[in-house]
Image (cartoon, rainbow, N blue to C red; front, side, top):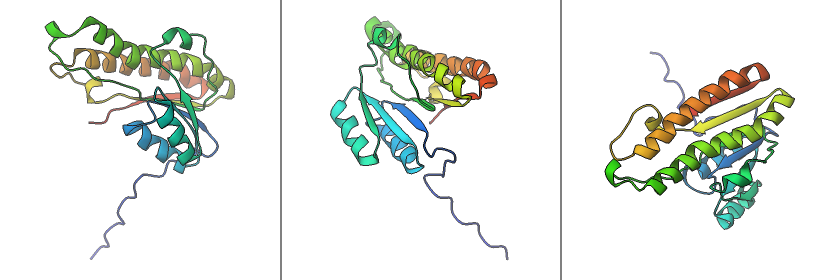
Length: 187
């Protein structure tokens, strides 16, 4: 009788992160927090970008990382940003659920700004350093909504579909410079 394989370990071992500088947006809570822990456990120096400075500071101390208290909706401040990171994880997001006819235009704009324009601006800020060193990883946390639509989530679905497109363009442009770009689609 054949032996059963050993069960998979969780979190999976991620190779090549020792000494890498990783920025995780929305990193102080939820999925971002879990990623920060996993990345730090694999040897990365994790920068937790979050509007909740106290939570980002607490997590940074916990994982020997760094906190960046930032309002990502202040896009004007991001336009001249230069990021020296090896890995960028575009994770920050919000959700509003409403039928299209009742969806507040300001809420729609806020979601598109945070979940599509901000990843563009941060990717734009990170690529020069990544190109210069011949290495970089851009990881965008999308969701099943980047691939399929759901009722009452017009802004979220639109932003995630756009993020999928931005990731693909980044991959096409960055590949020749040693930079990869991928979407992770939980759910």
